[in-house]
Image (tube, rainbow, N blue to C red):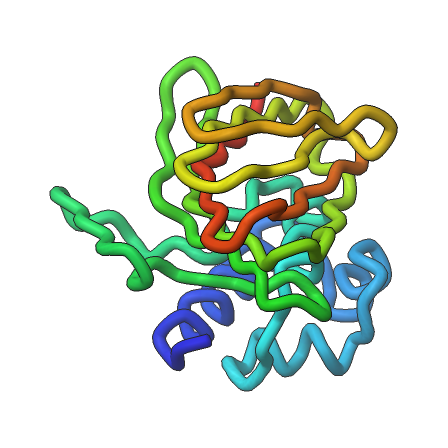
Length: 183
């Protein structure tokens, strides 16, 4: 994780925690993480995994993107490998935020890269979250833990993101675009 992304996460956590009026202790408790971990993150010294950031986002009532996205500056180009990337715990599978949008709801767009035959487990997101995935290359097993489906290049799936779900790359170089929609 780059120092710039650590600084963005630190500022975002402080801003959102202050906005909802929670102490470090209370937010840590609600997110089920150690207070010392949260303190390190807010000081810009932590190196969070995606599970920690999702837990904090759920506790704060904000999408993951609100914690990792820098302020918008008009035209934004993100080249492959340059987006803010966060790894899953115990895996080299990473998620890179590509876009957030505001219309009738909020949608966040991510480019995902998967480690071969390593399952990434995602906890339930905020109530009403829907996930959309399009596979760009390789093969992917994805979906709610109880009913994952196998997809190939160009295949699309939509499922509730507010239940536990999994991702597993079935071929080397598996990549997909994920759109999280918050209703």
